[in-house]
Length: 170
Image (cartoon, rainbow, N blue to C red; front, side, top):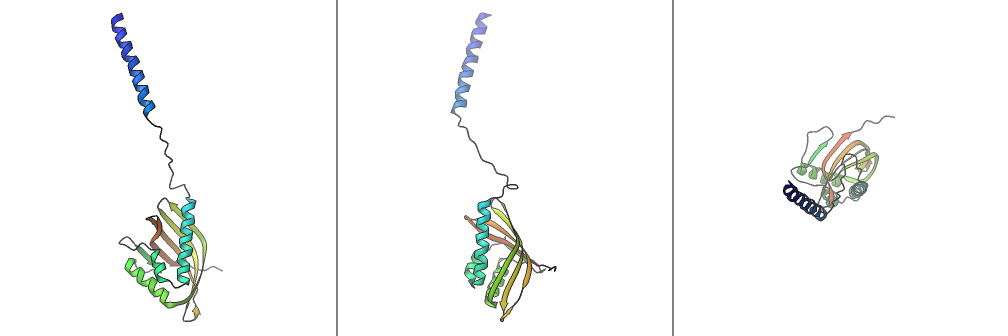
């Protein structure tokens, strides 16, 4: 019986030694996980706010090329505007060009701005007072705006726009 216990004891000791060495070799990895639902991503929010400011500045400056550069025009781009059927990238680009050609001035105020970031996707909502000047007449346009941004090549780009009339309550 002693002869059976001794080999068994040696095997157990060897197992403990080698298994402990294997565990010592494994580096401890700590991965920081974020929850895209609860994380606010303040840096991304700031980046998107800068894009919004630049977008509206490009309209004020009538810089159509800069305005178009904020969009990710491809087959996934969509737009809803004023209760009309959905439009695509080509139609949005034509509308944006026509807008810039039509105005002589542009003012805006974004009320109740909310920027929700979900890692590489963001949803921006606001109630906007857009005031383009067309034919020397300021035309106030109250709109609810939803913009969907995607981070593409490290830059935030608009991939969806939705503008709806906003009823003003006095």
